[in-house]
Amino acid sequence: MAIENKPLEKSSARKDKTSKKTKKHQVEKTPSPARDVALTDWLRAANIEPAHIRSRLLTQTTPKKLAQAALTRLQQYSWGLSPLRVQRFEQMLAALQWMIESETSERSEETEEPSLPSSLQWVFQETPLRTLHAETMLGAAALATCWPWLQNLDAEWIDNIRNGWIDSLEVAHRLPAEDVDMISWLITHVELPMIFAAWGEDSRMSKSWGETAAHSLHETVTAAKDDAAAWIQSGGRRLRASMSVAIRSLNWCEALGLTPIDSEFKKGFSNLLLETLRWTRKDGSLLLSPHRAYAGEVFDEFWSLAFRIAGRPKGLGTLLSARLPKRSAATLPATADAPTKKLAAPTSYWTNGEAGVMQRDWESHGSRVAVDYSVDPLLLEIVGIKGESLVAGPWSCTVWCDERELPITNSWQEVCWFSEDDVDYLELEAHCDDHCKIQRQILFIREAGIVLLADALMGSRKANWRIQSTLPLAGDYQVEHTEKTRECWLTSEGKRQALLVPLASGEWRRQVSPHELSVEDGWICVQHSSESQNLYAPLVMAIRREHQNAPLTWRPLTVAENLQLVSPDVAVGYRLQLDRAQWIFYRSLGTPVPRTLLGCHTAADFCACSFDYKTGNTDSLIEVSGADDDEEETDTSVKA
Image (cartoon, rainbow, N blue to C red; front, side, top):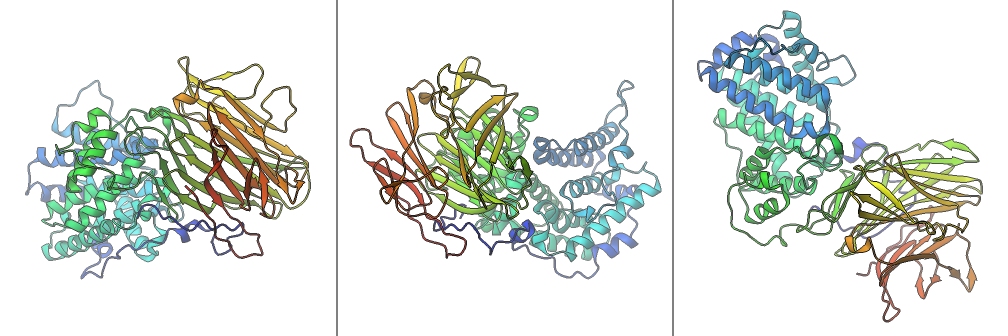
């Protein structure tokens, strides 16, 4: 299933987790069985000059149809990569497309001929494991797709490309499947073998290669109906590119007379399409992809083809029609409306994929939080209630101890994940050697539209600690401050879009505070300093429109243990009120023991509660129990 509701167990150590990301992406991909003649041997020995392949293909089709098929597949390469702004790959596609179109139409003297060799130089460069880089492999497959039109390349380029294919296939079959990203795996085990099968003159050999590749595609897509983690590497940002490889490969299957699509295949592909929809913005672009350059760029045919391959399930069709831009939805095959609640949970998180999308529901475009910690710094995007991106990009973290900057020495690792009807919660951990550890929290209270972003720093000793985190704004937002208090609003065209509340700061500006929030030059910056051992730097973002003009107040709360007040480096608590809605946030920075704040009694490491203004009772949204490094993990309780 897309969501794994683990027991909320949390360990600040998690020593059983490896820091090598490749070990976390273990997936069951079907290796290609032995063939009578290996593809690499055939590539070395066969005559695969572009002119020779072209003459063979033209005996089976007309030049116009051959060119149209190649141009169609070139467009499909752009589905996943254009939103990622892979510039040199786009330049290569433009050059290849120019070459094909110039042969089927009159060349304009005013049109400048692109330099194909210069756009190919990066494809097979001599770098370690170069042939398994996803971008390189996409370039290799694009060259194979357009091979009949490359006859004007000199012999050295031809040999370089052919040797690059051989190296790619040899390395891909030598490495464990879990060490190869999905794009590269699909290209080396499915798409390239399909293309070479179409080139082969020996029909028996070609059939063997095609059947093996089709079987690999079938098994890999079918496995996604239960677990799509292998496809969510890089935080879903390349999911469309992987699916476009599968769609192109299905086109080659059809050309070879193969039919890998069955009911199980459709279920797997349907699950992948649903996940792709989760990672899609209101305008059709990808969450966590560069926001400004490609906002509004939509590839309508992708959704139409993918929906057909998935078998046109009614529930998925209803979701696609509701969530896609009108132009894209109009290209979908007509289906009757169907209930969507039983289709899938709105939130999706993948431990092995190190990424997830938290969203309120399927009905609205907005109220979503996307996170990807498979890269450093981790990526975060928060989408407002109407589908507008508020912040999007790298969420960086910098730590100083006694004015000396400390590098973060390991990547972010999951400590705790929980999802229920009311909340989604993710906690990550990173270390600065033995000096300190940082535990980063992302809490999304769905219906309320409240997002808590917090860093808890636990130092090894008392010192002058300072932590700073920054987040880029996703658009041209202005900032509206108040004269007397420290909250601020992100505004666009004079309308408030989001409220920012620095909980650890005093509400009033006249109060001295070690916590500082600033928004300038397109960045949100949160700083917190302390001369003790631990500190907590929380920021609340309220994204519902009714919160933007509501009366608000917030206070640090007194935390007591055994009738004694505790200092802020031991435990902290805050109360936030927006109009009549109120919440309490509590965080232990030391050993979690029973403590009390504002009538709430808890032994949790972290808890968030809503507060009933009529009765004065608290309703627990989430409680996370923690454990010391030397203790076993402790179960947690969650109350909805």
